[in-house]
Length: 335
Image (cartoon, rainbow, N blue to C red; front, side):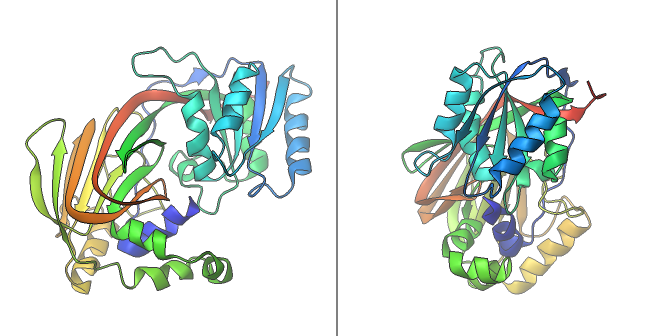
């Protein structure tokens, strides 16, 4: 899901802002751990094993297994195996897509106390958007140290329903231009020129023709308008310094919504300038907040969840799952 970072940056040059997780951190308080690794991302599993062994060997932690992800479920099965093996802490090594897949088996159901395994992020993606938003270490050795010497904090999740599917998201869901950019970005070109591939794909979508759209928040009457993009976010940063959703907080039980309707290149430039200075009233951007958001469009538009394309849809429903996950978040004294 590193594509989410570049795709959104190209589509709108929108960059989300970090907000601290609310609520006091809790001691990790675990002794059994497991590692879920995406072999397509983790090129040197032997090195990762050494880092984990060094961090746990003198502290009495008990490993219950190493589990590799597969293409069929992206990591959900491996995370479920880790939980079934008795892990109190699951270290997930991969990108945002791997984290998203692993989150479902680790998450608490609404209204159920959080007594399951905590998540520790080992960032191996091309974007690592969740790690950047939560100010987690991007260096793997530092991330391993945090996992075993930290405290956990609650994290909201998003329940996304679209195209007849229900998905879990950690970052955001979106309709329109940003999803179209992601769908049109070719993997060979991405490998060759990196983020430049999104410029190629984004050139024809950044001022996409607006679609008649309705947005209903928390059961209120829908607001109708023409939009090129609707983003529904949980967390907030692609790169430092430019705020799209200034009020975004990953643990406030709320969703932040932005609807964009740029008609010309000059509209895009105004939006970029507004987000650069942290303005909350950029021309062409409408903002909403709530716990449940329903979006419908008059014609099918591309849809993504944390950068993974779901296809073209005419409706999208996103609900927040407050404090559904615990994430290793804050370093304490070394044990």
